[in-house]
Image (cartoon, rainbow, N blue to C red; front, side, top):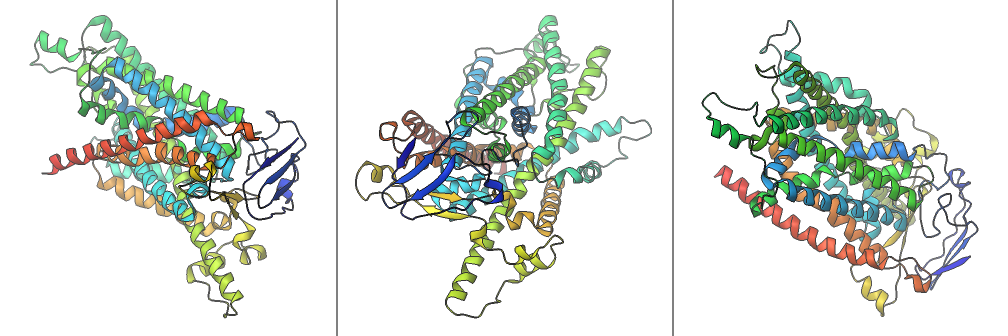
Length: 574
């Protein structure tokens, strides 16, 4: 079949690279002034790509090692992190019924934003979150969102390090022969980070897949312990969390469970960012799609559904179990409600389960640090990659204008000089060897011009994903950036006493932008140039309308939650 799309204003002839020889569905791509002719020789199915998709690596590339099972666990591990420890307090503040609805709504809009982000990657040829934004809003936007991701993930790593320190330090004190005041928590954290160094320098999520299996199984132990403890509290109508001065009536109040509580606006604004953070994994979804074997649209949707479903069930059980266990005394970190030593009225099985659960939770968060360090490093290197390509453009322009060459900046010279794996091709690398950007051109009048009023999007042409650009492959940059991120986050973790400030800041502002505003905004812009089904295209009109609605709600939610957080912070300080 032949499909005609009116899209671009240049003619591009692609010669297949070794990595694209198996991409049999694209025989030719002719980009003309008024139309695009795509000759498709294979039937579209789960074994073949959609003709409109720009996938990197190619659909049938052997560089795609991950199955749906591996990809699902990678995405689950990206979602389930330290934020799950704060879910019980959401149940305590908003009640069981309201929190259930909030989690269902958050899971649904997270699923839609993930799918729209993946579709945006396919439309524009982006191989990273930043490149999807670049396709929609330009190179400056790519640099800006990469900085945003880097800062956001730095805060997440700091929060994880704080939790690792606070969880493992009491466990170290349980070792016979070690005095309670004999071990400093910062030293425990330092030892754990040294232990994690081989994992921190890994270059792909597929290489960290065993982290996902161990982490998911570990947090499940604490979930079982909380659910068991909560069920026992319901059966016995008493709590292990009490003071000696409490009366019987006070003890009943401690364990009061609000199933149908109507929360206040302040409680909603406090709780919803925590729920949003629980499903946040957008910084890894494009990498997972890039590694997925036969990444058809149906397979990436199935992977995302499985991940969201498992994460919802695990998080909901964890949050509800923690609330039923602690009642109205639920803390912002549920581990503060779990005793570190055996209580007088606590049976041995419960004590062992909570001890194993604490160890499991510490293991899960410990192995989650490399899962977040990888996208944090990639976001930083994407900024460097943009700068590197920009400098190459300036050097090419200088040589074209007959200006003297050899004015390469010192930093780029160091990249080449101290890269142990430097090759002759690396020393002569140019931007066009890695990525070519083709701008869209649309009519000046008509409905398509009105739909694309924000900006004319573009398509990125790549043979390999951005993670194989020279800046990412450079060993000096790779190991140096990993060490920089680790040291900076360690210093931040040692300077901050608690994790609540970190979650509050990133949950009320940055998470909304990364999880909802940017994915929905990119989808609206990139879909604006896709013809409707009646004209031979596959634009999803209902999804565009839904994206507009979710985009507006996300902007309102981000503004309201951020203002509320700043007001609460000002009250605390002043």
